[in-house]
Image (cartoon, rainbow, N blue to C red):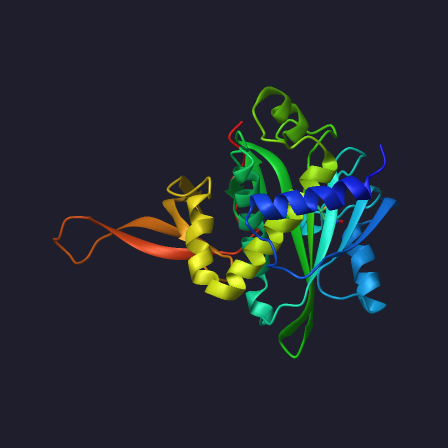
Length: 278
Ligand code: BTN
């Protein structure tokens, strides 16, 4: 079914009021399409033509949806596929902040609607231990400074999902989702949530936002094995690396009993797989 702009505009106002955001953000400029190769790609094209921050592109389906690590993002009709343009004042090395604050903002907004979303480091939205959606942030950089960013979000609504995925529409048929009844509603919640997370990171800084991100992180305190060494996940750095405390056994000096010591390492996204609960 075609994306209904009128229904979306109405939902946007309702979400603003529910999240107490009235008057907080400038207006978004929405572009919708029945089919695109990728909403991220289309938004980069629009930015080249002069589109501004908070331009949003939504497609009903994508033929070449992009996922993390160069993967394809299956984008059949029924899912939510959208991209938002941002113009952050960040160094290239701080790009991960955009994913962290967007993921937190979207999860938090969905939680206001009774959907208990958690986060899987660094960019997954998780519901009941399964993947509900993901975020792909792309940036353009000049002299080490991010000039423009596109944050792309894919969320499973009524599209079919793989074994490790979950569809929000099916979840909401069984649980109370406080009015999340359509793709237009969901799009409004996701855009306002993303906006909210981004503004919060601008207003309060990434350290404060990270504390909230960690409260929703599904793997905090989980045991992992890194290069054969056992460790515990203790957090995420402001540049988006996973903090792990490795317990290493060391012999301090001859004759002393073996002592356990702890060493913190930081892992870059993509260097460790955390899997799904089921
Ligand atoms: C992931 O791999 O988890 C991130 C997936 C991001 C997919 C979205 S769908 C809308 C936007 N356009 C794209 O081509 N990709 C992102």
